[in-house]
Image: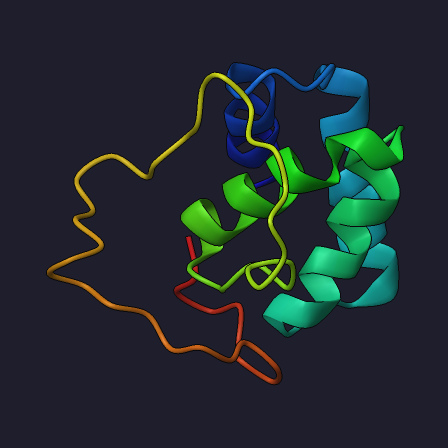
Length: 108
């Protein structure tokens, strides 16, 4: 999970390498993350190094884990490339607008 998400962030242009993936895996284990919101908190703390990376992080997180971006109502600039989960068509597979309390089991 941590490696796949790290690759997606790297592909989207963030400076994410194996070290950050390892930190995310440790944070999820130490925190005992069981919800998407808890996973997001761990990922945010370990994968983002600059506030300017937030829109890209948020977009990739939503694509990978199916949750909406908390910044969806803001008009933020977008990066040149974006990541979409392979084989997923958002028009055919709409996701819920809330991820609070959503279990991580089956999220990846």
